[in-house]
Image 1 (cartoon, rainbow, N blue to C red):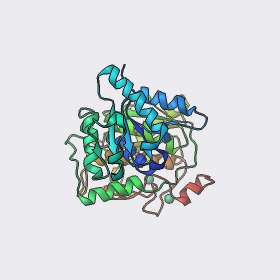
Image 2 (image 1 turned 135 degrees about the vertical axis):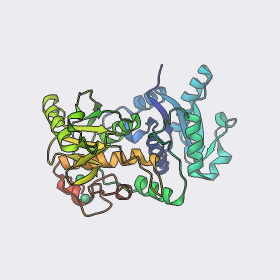
Image 3 (image 1 turned 30 degrees about the vertical axis):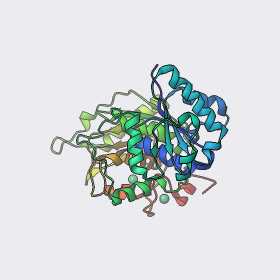
Image 4 (image 1 turned 60 degrees about the vertical axis):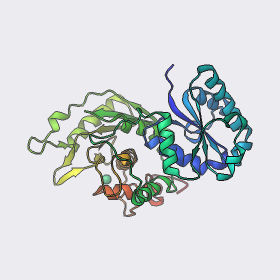
Length: 349
Ligand SMILES: [Zn+2]
Ligand SMILES: [Zn+2]
C-alpha cells in the first residue's frame, strides 16, 4: 500500500526545537513529513494519530538524545516500526543521534544499525537521511538541477528563514484552494499543502482542477503573463466554488504594467491570489533552487495577506515586506509581524 508520508519524526517532547528544525528541513526538501505539531490538532486522539502516522509513513526517523532514549513513547514508537521492519524485510527505522552523549545509550533494538550523526554535522547528516529515504523523491525543482550548497552564506540564509521564531497568523481561513496554472513543480504544491494550514489556523488546503486559460493574458512581445488578468478569472471561480481563497500557482513568468516581473499578485482585498515559481527558482550567490519551497511559502503567505487587506510592511523580516529581489524574499520571515498580525485582528499580537 502506498504510504502517505515519507518520514515520521519520533522524538522526545523535550527535543522539540531540533525535531521541528529537522522536520522543516526534510519538508522543504520535498519529503512528506509526519511531525506531531503539524498533524495533531486540538481534539484529536493523540494515540490514534501517532499510530496512524507510523502506519502511514515509509520511515520512522528516531531522534536519539539522553531524554528520548528514556522516553517510553519513543521506545513504543520504535517497537511498532521494528515489527513492521521484521515483517516486511524493508528498512523502516532510521536512527539519528542528536546529542553526542546518546551514542553510548542507543536502545538495544537499534544497536546493529548505522545511525546518522546530527550532533556532529547537521547538513551532512541530513543529506545521509535524505539519501536513505529516497534519492528519487528529490527530483530537481527547476530546469537546472539544484546544487545543494553548504556555503556559510547559504546556511545563514536557511537558518534565518527556517528558525526565525514565528508569530503565527491569528487569522483563520476555512479553505484555501490551490489552482495549478500551466506546469508547476509538484514540490511547490506539496509544500503549500503542508504549510499553509498552519499559517491560517488549520484552513483546509486542497488542489482544485480549475481550468484557467492563461494564454489570453499573455503579452505577445515579452511572452510574460499579465497577473491581474489571471486574477480576475480566479476571482470569478472563487465566487462559484465558495472557497475562502483561491491561490493560483504557476511557473509562468508574471508581470504587471510598469514592472518587469512580479513574484505574485493578489486582489486587495479579494479572494484570489497568484504566485509564480518562475523567478523563485533563480540562483543567488548563496543558494538556488533548494530554497524554492521556502520562497513559495513566503510569497504565498504574502499574497494571501493582501487578500486579507494587508498592505506592504516596512519591517524587512515581515512576510508582508515587498520583495523586489530574491534577496528580499530570502531575508524576510514566513509570518506576519506583530503589527500586521494585529491588523488581522490577532489577540496574541
Ligand atoms: Zn505585495
Ligand atoms: Zn508586517
